[in-house]
Image 1 (cartoon, rainbow, N blue to C red):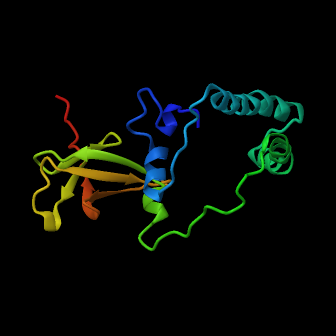
Image 2 (cartoon, rainbow, N blue to C red):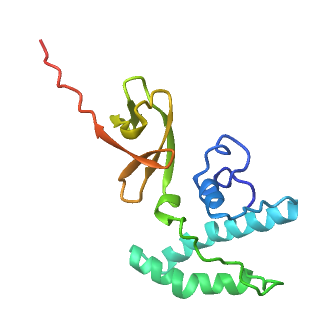
Length: 176
């Protein structure tokens, strides 16, 4: 990558990039372009996509997501790959099978840390949740991890153990 924030590069996003976290959990090493030439190649490829794709789709009167996906699969990416892909020097695959302990649902989700308040509550997505410490008895001032999934559901974990929780519904205020 060119070292952009989403890939753990400089700037304000470097400490909380979800992409970097997921790659680390999967044992994937992110390689950043260190030379001006390598950064230029990456930027040119991004610019090629940004400057060509939308105008081409407009010219071809593509208006639906289904038609756009068909165009990408059948026309755009094959042409782009033919023009810009470089044959690898080493033909050996570097893929490895997932280990039994690697759960993609738990890795390819968004993760957020929260510190538990004295009353065993946390705040997340604009709501408060009461945690049941269960076997841990006391979670006050401990850090829990919230895993938010593609369907917007989430689970809360402490040291890898799921923590039951209940959304706190604030009482309705009576107006005088």
